[in-house]
Amino acid sequence: MGKGRAMYEQTRRMGAVIPWLTRLGVIRLTNLYPAHPDLPPKQRAQIEAFNSSIQQWVTTVEEFRATPQTNAQVSNMGSLGDKPLAVISAGEQSRDWLEMQDELAALSPNSIHRVVKGATHESLLYDKGDSRATSTAIEQVVQAVRTDRPLTR
Image (cartoon, rainbow, N blue to C red; front, side):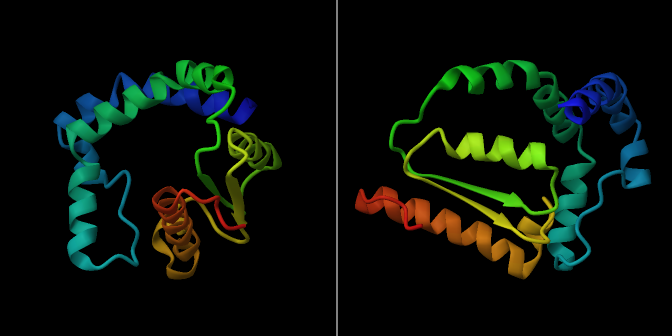
């Protein structure tokens, strides 16, 4: 996707600078990636400390640099067999992104793909209502593995 390629290129260029800015304390001072405001204070402090750590940024940069290889691996995967797979998508995404999530869910005939209307990527983790879809899907996959039964649709 065009947006994805542009984000990849921007992140790749920033990747050379961000670890140095982190070492100098600039990332902590600017709170570049703040914790979600609805989190309890202790968890917010933990996430903010993690988000300003050199290890977090080095890992993030490495992850983005590996995007082309990761995409190629997924494209060549073919199938997960009948392993349970849950894909939860934020409804506030582009049509292209949601179609790619459909393709991801198609890697297993034993899959579910739920689009949470009005949700964002972040709200699937932090919003009590939206995160319920995420935790429910995790529980369903665990139950399917434990009982050797297909996912409930």
